[in-house]
Image 1 (cartoon, one colour):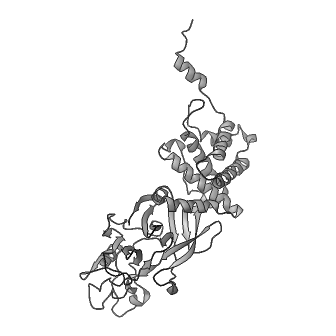
Image 2: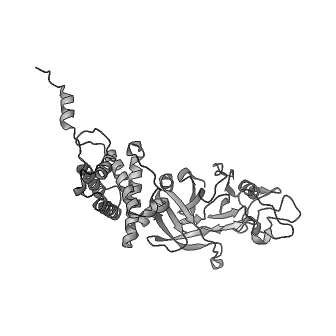
Image 3: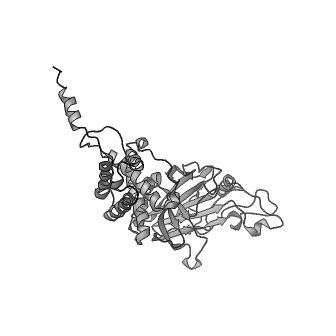
Length: 381
């Protein structure tokens, strides 16, 4: 007579469950529908997108067909116990379904996310990834309904937990060149905020866009370095100085400025307010056409000159004195700990800077995107 099973092993085998393909798909849909890790509006929209995707692409009637079985198997994480307490499995499976639903709903996303192997999603990354994809799927769904609740929730997450958001979500600013002189030192404009599935990123945009939520921001426009008074002295190889940079006084919940590929971002607290300026190494057209045109500077050079030129520290014309300007540039920083962002960025690889208001103070953050991947999100001021 065969020896009885070891009791513990007997319990494990009796509790083990093998999901068939339809059960697995339905379980993932149910998890998306009932999760309490996002708002009710996000949950409803994300589930609707996923349900529409399954109904169109993998209806139960297709069970047994190769595409159906392959889709379900891609969400399998192997052997597990019945009533598995590890909810991380559900989050990883849901991430896979939500990505496929986004790609199905928005054909421009094909290739954006790349292949996803849920076995490669770490336990540590799974909770934040799940919340991120729930929100993104909800945003995509709301494009079809005209709602913006999920974009607003993402915007709230940027405000409440900026560093956590920037660690897992790409952000870009499509900035403005407008300067409203009637506002004095300030420059507040109504922007929009939305999720852009084609690049898997969130966008602050100075133009109205469908599916975007309106948001009032302080817009720090980019300045050609040669337009700054005194920055260039004809016939002087060292140029002038950067003590007369016109800065923007921050006053709104968010500060944004257009993306960086070589510019220097300058920041300073003055008389209870925070001022910022965005200085580009490019020459303006008038300077380039001058009889004695100033040199073309690299990003590092313009940041270094802003910090100190001809023995004169950089400063703001409308917030002068009472402490130095902090400079965050390409390969160089001044008066702040971060050493600057990488040199060699271009249109497809860029650095984003956003700020959030904290009373009369501001927290300012940077995020580098290279080859579609988030690099070095950090607080710089």
